[in-house]
Length: 401
Ligand code: AMP
Image (cartoon, rainbow, N blue to C red; front, side, top):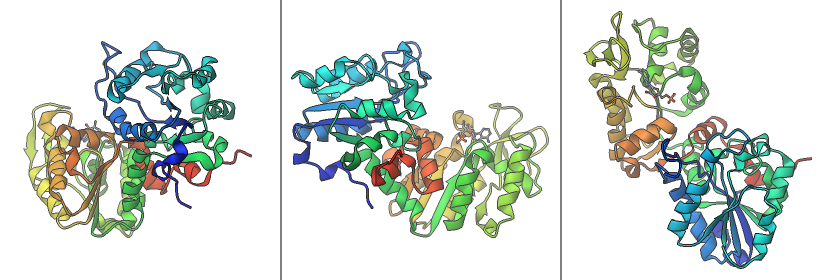
């Protein structure tokens, strides 16, 4: 069974009330909570919103969460800045409700003014994250059709993104962002074109162990970078100095290195090190890191090695930075990988996971990738599991009994 997407709907939308879940979880300025510091997530939703409006819906009810207000009303997490930004972009009124359960909402639906209604932050209600059926049913009662374009929360069994499907049966559709994300991730999980290379970086092996174990079966090379590389090097008996490297991570790395796919694992052969976290950078030309030094980025020979392994590949997945990239002195490895991928025009390149996404954005190279996934946790879990609860519910419906 396939997901139904909104592009199957045209005439059917006319005069209907549609309720649509988005991920408007944008960062707000700490000093001025009315300022959105990065509008990407809202911009990504505009295509779906505009499509629904252009096809003549009677009312469009938008839903999202913002931050972690933990089930309580907290003005710091109000969707007010999102409502203003949307009104500006759509060039029409966007009415923000006081809560998702306002008595006035049903009345609003009968009035002629304001086609677009934004429900206040879903997570002001504890029932949202708890996946409470009564809450989902109340949301569903506002509308004829449900649209889910919130890929970023598709791994959660929350009321508005998962449970709500139980109340729409045949009237639940995926939005355009959901479609793009799923189609891109399927190219990684479903018979990826070979040669297939995965680059996994970041802080801890334990955070990425599931994805590594899943990927290692299908990849031709599994390139490991970032602090995650040191437990692997330590597991092979190398000196890692003061680098981040826990015993638990060494044990996990040993497990991978004992598998029949161990020859696929590609590790750093030199490093950029420092005596302290974020201190002066030095090149360490060998695999062994001297006592008192910590590895904070991959070295130039490693960059060359990784580029050789990437050359000619047809599919590349990248998750996690190659070093302490927030500090310019240790950003070279991460930026080099971003540049290499940006030049691989004939390959399918997918960047998923928060930090590597911000690295390609910082490098101004996001548009050169085949796909940059917006949902960090969701895209990782999709690769690990092959699908997500929110997607399964859209596909097959949901029966709560
Ligand atoms: P993750 O969220 O697991 O992808 O980890 C990303 C974080 O790992 C970033 O904040 C990086 O600065 C950090 N990181 C990557 N490499 C290193 C390293 N060699 N030493 C310390 N931190 C690192």
